[in-house]
Amino acid sequence: MSGAIAAPKYDPFARLLHWLIVLLLIAQYIVAWTMPDIHRGTQPLGLIAVHLDLGAFIIVITVVRVIWRLVRKEPAPAEGTALTRDVAYLTHGLLYLLLIVQPVLGWVNASSRGWQVTLAGVNLPPLVATGSSLGHQMGDVHALLAWAMLALIGLHVAAALYHHFLLRDRVLRRMM
Image (tube, rainbow, N blue to C red; front, side):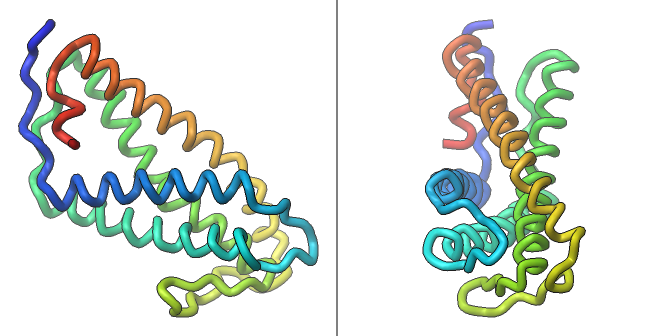
């Protein structure tokens, strides 16, 4: 399968949005791992505030990316079996879903703590009432889904590297 030809590149705006999301996720995971533990009475200061801001920005960029993907023609799927194409579609779909659901769950949790979530200095509305037990529970789901997203990202990166180094096709270069 060496030298197999994949579809042409994604358009420049799609590539920009993809790599912007990558950079935001790297920053978000670094902040999440280095910020203080959140307990009752914790205030959204310092790295916690940065984490909230990054999450809001990730939602916006992901929504723009999904809209762009819906209105613009994507490159044809990479060559491969029906199974590999199905896994690729499923992985991408789950990544898009988690890129929206994950920060929304964090926003729900922040709202239940009475924290203000902002986007570019604009206050966003709370998604649940302060003290909401559902909001507190969504914080636990948020933490769990962070690991699921990391596993999916790992699968996505591994597949891109597999295409590039083993299949030697242009799948990875489509997004470069």
